Length: 166
Image (tube, rainbow, N blue to C red; front, side):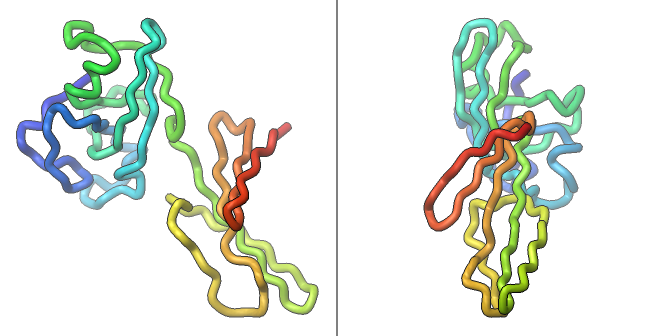
């Protein structure tokens, strides 16, 4: 579906034009409607499965009235990239982060041969993370779990690798 901005700031805190390529996600995925979600400003590639049209949109709002966690509400401009406004609702196949990708950070810390491996769930790992303290030479190691959990993408020191999960 699509919605009009009406000059109002979205849940992420910014006013957008109806022509901007933005999206609103369901309230359960968004989180606390009184705060800026960690998912704000993430980009999503959406494909209309009937005609193949694609749009890359930025999450900028929450959608309290969305039917379920597979619903996404688009700005008028974003919807027009996928279909005509008369269609109103179209089947789509979102590509990451929908269903939103999960980001994990793994910390490696080497203390005289003793490995301490901890997992920390975080909302985004596209920001630089650093571990301060200890003698380990590793820093936070970001992982991106690709839905539907069949691949694991890692990135460390600029090297990206993909792993197949079985």
